[in-house]
Length: 221
Image 1 (cartoon, rainbow, N blue to C red):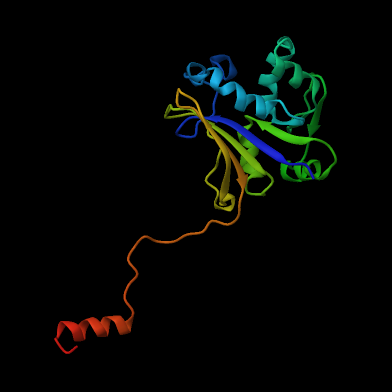
Image 2 (tube, rainbow, N blue to C red):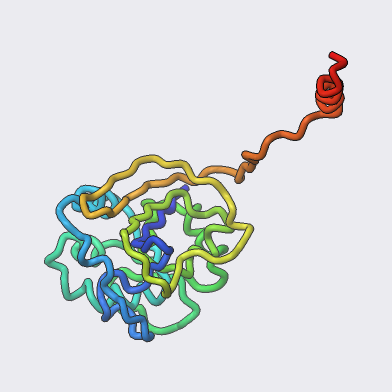
């Protein structure tokens, strides 16, 4: 059974759109590249741990197109060399050509296709970006870990990675975390169980307690 890890750059208000540069998204989003001012050497270790292992990529079509337009031309970078070499599984309804080296189409129902992939032999799977995948995979319980890289910025608008879906409700357990001097928080979270609830309100007194208080107030105790 393969483990699926989701990895996201997010703002404080949950926006993940075009974190690396304006060229990543041409839909009118004007703040592309919002992560750039916060990257420094302190993030090298957590990013290296995330991207330096043995895995295959699991991507939505839009993220695949962004990566395919960039990484084949930047193979001199360590991440580029890895991304170009490993298998890419692309969830798409399109029958367009997947020209990037070692790319494979996952057609049909995304949950069914990814469930089959998860149950097959092979390395673990890493989701990069691909916000639409989470809306299908989180309610189905297919994501085992999340690596949330949160930047100290609020964008106010843009694509978010979660949907208003009560079936996605669950707890997550913090496995490890890292903070950068510029305020970037890297949290590794493992999937937990059902959400537990409670209340900070004062517990109402029982009937016996109310009767006791009444006797005390009347001076009969």
